Length: 226
Image (cartoon, rainbow, N blue to C red; front, side):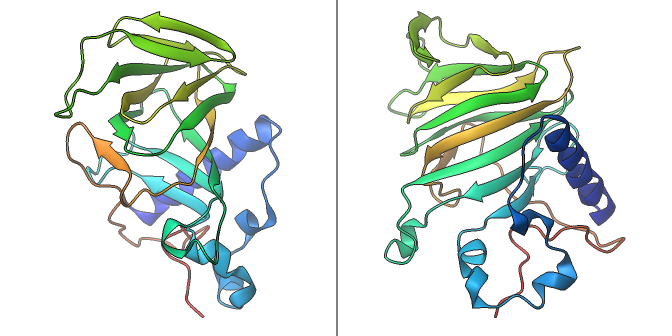
């Protein structure tokens, strides 16, 4: 991705967050120049990859496969003595043209919450022992309601609604056409993108960046070390 595309995507997400009335923590407003001056008191942000993020899954088709996100809080399984939080929270911004590919988590349980905007569609399957799609019904938990649906059904989440995603439950995200972009919340167990994601089709995670203009915000993979 070009840096200009990343900058535009972050500003678009920032505008959506403001529209939905969600307040971001101070570190989300730090400029690249300010990060050069910040000391070890902000190591939790660096070590746990908090802050702005972009994924195109390494495919180079961000407007089709990918989304913008912010990790607001997280623990660290590799540094549990220093960062013992067992939970995480994210914001995700998905446009109508975008999708997040089918995947499950080996260990993480999470709630996906529609924080505002359009309607998000989440297709769910149980995984087979070999990592395929099971044809058995999926038990779904949405805002205190438990029910069963056929494998591969898309669950619609309107603003304010949520779904609980259990380990080994395949899921993807798309946006219902004509409803507009969606701001999602994710409240989960400690997040470990390096080891806990199992994609149905093997893909990457972070984009290759072409620097065509200065960064608006540093991504969580770009903080200078102290």
